[in-house]
Image 1: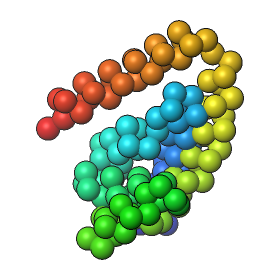
Image 2: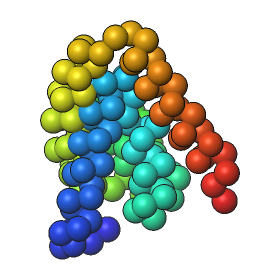
Image 3: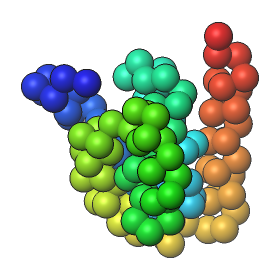
Image 4: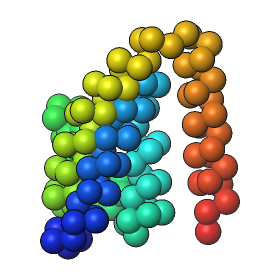
Length: 125
């Protein structure tokens, strides 16, 4: 990944923001959002997307998984750090939104999001 590309840096921070927001909103964000976006829009392999996403969550829950991915060259630390920047703010904003929604609305948002991602992943070549 070339870190001198302003568009790439902004895109990764926005992805972190979106994933953090959805994490705070419906309790998901890391794997279900970041992995597909890194694969579909940033050209990452599935392994590199998973390893990089796990890296942003490594302290404390994913440290051993990150170590395994890192040993095989499947972690992009610079990308993980940029995603973290957006994720922190996004998770705060998402949680603020979530607590203002009804349980029914929140459940429906979660269901629609999961359906869209599942269909996209199922038909991806």
